[in-house]
Length: 114
Length: 184
Image 1 (tube, rainbow over the protein chains, first blue to last red):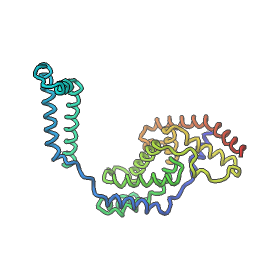
Image 2 (cartoon, chains in turn brown, purple):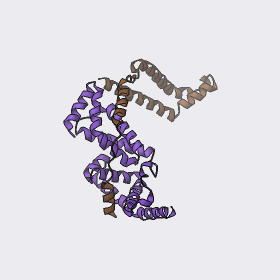
Image 3 (cartoon, helix red, strand yellow):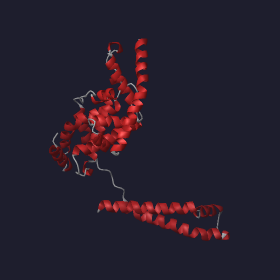
Image 4 (cartoon, each protein chain N blue to C red):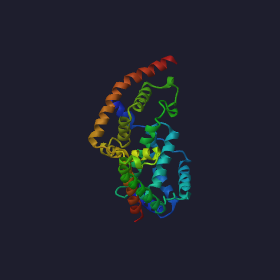
């Protein structure tokens, strides 16, 4: 049996690529080379916005326990719900995760440019 | 196949001459299409897969570190592409290319060979890939293991398991073929 398998699989028929194969590949290569390069993400423009968003997130997470400890200072049920949600451990971890992701993406971009 | 020619063509492509890629395609089209054919058993799909592999190589040419031969890098890239493509869309159990001659005119040996190939096609991916690359590399365990990115011991174990599975499958495949032939 092993001999049969060896014989059959080591004597696979060779196929010849079609005549149009090279032309087809080179057409695809030419299309690829003619295409404009992908537009890089505008990190320099996005960075200030991201920094502001992160600062807001940090402020909310930091102040959330203060607001939730003083119910009379909460102006509306909607804000109260938001503050309670922001003060949960899951929200804190989400904020930390976003912060680490943003820092990592920024570091990669800076390294790629240097 | 001259590694220096490959290197010269790669340098020209990276210098901004995409037409130099044609030399690489001409030199390696046969092996790449044949390797793809062993994975999918369909000539048309084999050419599609090989073309995609060449295009991936073109896009990633600057990432080739030149630590080994260009062909080694190209084949590793193509093998990975074929493996993932075949896992996403497995080949049809009876590819059109496999239908060559009326069953009545086949000798018992032809029938047995075809049964073996079909049985290989039905193996789980990791055993099938091990067999395909082992025989494509002319039974060189080290080369096939490197191509799959596994230790040699792992490849040997997969080959042994693949043969074991084939031994179990083939009596069934043979009897199924006989039943089909008698029904015609």
